[in-house]
Image (cartoon, rainbow, N blue to C red):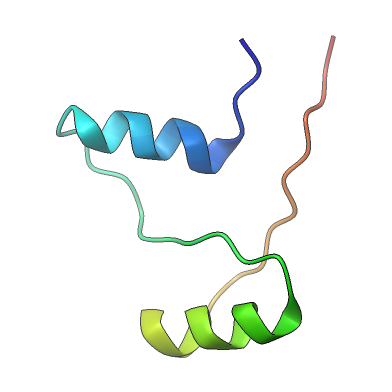
Length: 52
């Protein structure tokens, strides 16, 4: 199964496992909006499938 981190976090949260807050953004405008919603300071992390 290929799963991005944000997808895995959503699955874990469904079962009551605590995960850090976060959101997916695909543009710089979305990133600014998400940062404001989360409190202003964020870390941007690219997510790609990797490994073999």
